[in-house]
Length: 251
Image 1 (tube, one colour):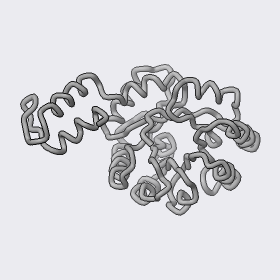
Image 2: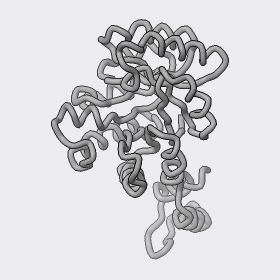
Image 3: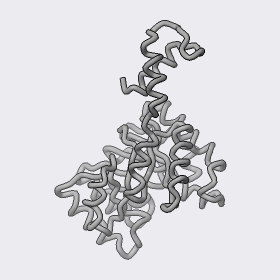
C-alpha cells in the first residue's frame, strides 16, 4: 500500500461519500469513529454498509473495547474491505482483519509499534497525533513532543518491510502554510503519506510527498554514474545512495 493521501469522510454523511471519491484521494476513509456522535453510530454503519454494496473504500471502525467495535468489525469482515483500527495496541486484535492500517495514537501503541507492524494483516502504520497529544497533555500543533513517537513508527515500519507510515491530521483548515510545513516535516522524518480531513488538503499533501524536480535531477545523475562507487556533486555515491536514487525515480 503506497498511497500518500487518506481522506476522512464522516460515516453519517453519505451525501459526501461520492464527493470524497471524486476529489482524487488515494484512499477514502469512511469514518465510523471520531466523526460520528454516539447517537448516530448505528445509522452511520448502515449508510456505510449501503455504500459498500457497490463501491469500495477503507473504513475506520470504532476502537476495540467500545460498544460499537463488534458490529463495525462484522461490517468490514463481511465485505472484505480494508479497515483502519484506531487506538491500535494489541496485535491479536489486528490479526482478526484481512487488510489493516493500524492507527497508533496512544503511548502503549507507540511502545508496541514493532509488534503491531509485524502482524501479517497490517499493511501500514498511521499516527494519531491528536489523541496522543491529549494523553500526554501537550499541544497537538507542537511537533517536538512527538519526535520519538514518529521515529518509532518509521523504524517499526521499515523493520517489518512496510511502506513508510502515514502522518496524522493537520487540523487548521485555513492555514495553507501550516499544512505545507507539516507535510515537509513528516516527509523529513520518514513518513510516506498523511491523513486528510478536507478535500482541499489532498492536492497539497500529494504534491508535498512527491519528489521535487531537484531530487529527480540528482537521482538521474546518480543513476547515470553507474553501479560502481563514484562521485556525484562532490559526494561519494555507493550502493545505498544508488538505491535511494532509484527509489526517487520509481525504479
